[in-house]
Image (cartoon, one colour):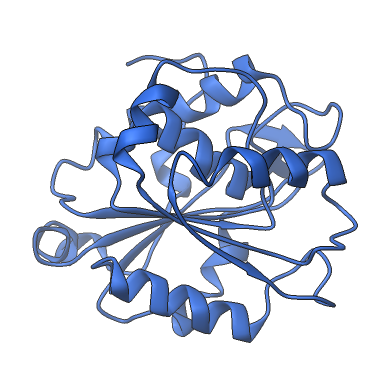
Amino acid sequence: MSSTLTIDPRTVVWSVPESDRATALAERPLLLLMHGRGSHEHDLFALAPLLSAETVIASLRAPLPLAGAFSWFPDGMPGDPSLEAADAASVAVLDWLDTVPEARRIGLLGFSQGGAMTIHLMRHAPERFAAYVNLAGFSIAGELPADTRLESLRPPVFWGRDPADPAIPAFAADRTAQWLPSRSTLTARLYPGIGHSISREEIDDVNDFLRDNGLS
């Protein structure tokens, strides 16, 4: 695959030093973290101490600069990025992952735009990942060739959110609630009152989900 967008490997934050990485990836699962709009690779990496120490973690920086931070999609209507923009960002992640051949069992965890990325990557390469964690994210409108295949594959997806999340439009949440059940084995959890954020209770549930799917 190729893309006009790229993931800069120098910006990826790893939980394992480079000298030990190949061995660790051959023996342990890899969890990719993808931050939200206007954030950076160190943001979600702060969750690493709360996740399983048996998992290798790599936190990616989104490829688009945005006011001193980074974004996966260009500015536009919140909750409704273009399919083409999401495709380009997904191909960039898959291209980068091709440079990590040691990784055997891979999971995705994303927040907000990063959560949308987990679902979009599932639509591009459903057989490549073991499980998907979408925190305060959404699915993107449009159709992709793998969508039909997902109806039989039904990969495991965790979707956690506040039902009154002020940052995600209701139409995007509604679209996701209609789209995911028939195309995934869905674990959906609501966390009223957390707003556009992640709670410790949610992380505990995520850890259970990752463990149940061989990612811890």
